[in-house]
Length: 295
Ligand SMILES: Cc1cc2nc3c(=O)[nH]c(=O)nc-3n(C[C@H](O)[C@H](O)[C@H](O)COP(=O)(O)OP(=O)(O)OC[C@H]3O[C@@H](n4cnc5c(N)ncnc54)[C@H](O)[C@@H]3O)c2cc1C
Image 1 (cartoon, rainbow, N blue to C red):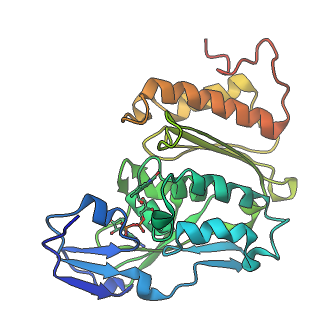
Image 2: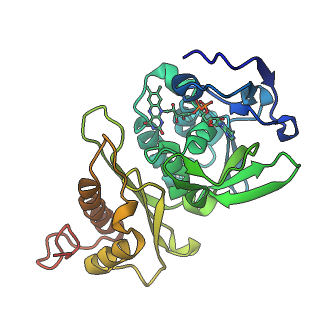
């Protein structure tokens, strides 16, 4: 896609350099596919040299410039050797990358930050980091810095809380979430299609609070999290009631990748599957149907 209005490519990750008509450029897989008739400069953040993935005392720091390919490699990389067994939630990394149905050329350039900043409902990096309570660090043009959970930063289809010139620097995933047991469910209308429904369940270890968290993405315009404290894990009807309360009908996404009614039905179904898988609830009880007793 030609971008005839762009006159400069500036290597910078300093928001003080940003001015109207600029866009941050990461992998460029969205910018160069969608094009633009208004942008004047592209500020190339990939020149920042931020380490892609850093294991810290608090968890995992994912640089905004970390590519999908780098993230995919992480569970087997030397950098994760010290945490591999303990961070069971690393099991989610590859299914979430695989939900990004694209060739190696796209995986090698697409970034985690670009995916979250694009804020598509089927953004698999949003699914992963929101489900693990990832917190975004955002740098502002005036020198300000703020943090916000990814689950709140993405507010709708291609909508988020990033103000003009704000730069997503990194996403920090807490170690407690990484220690959790997880369950992953994804549906698409076609074999290699974009996600229509993507749910991730997380059961934190008892020492980490024992919370059950189910994060709904792709099926809804923005991430929705259902949280149940230890001792308050729901039965099927309780889970269905929680979904009813959290997701009004018009929050289900509507595009070529799935009708809202289908996304809604599958959300209830997959959430219930996750509840059973993570809590060990029995399957097949007469009052425990996969629609959570909504009829
Ligand atoms: C074949 C193909 C399949 C795809 N499949 C999917 C899919 O399944 N799901 C999906 O969500 N997307 C998909 N995409 C879209 C796209 O590849 C991804 O969203 C990708 O992660 C975008 O990252 P990028 O680094 O290329 O972003 P870029 O194109 O560089 O930037 C995208 C947007 O984010 C902004 N931005 C980038 N980095 C930052 C930052 N650090 N801070 C603030 N703003 C920033 C840019 O200014 C721009 O507005 C697909 C694309 C292709 C070509």
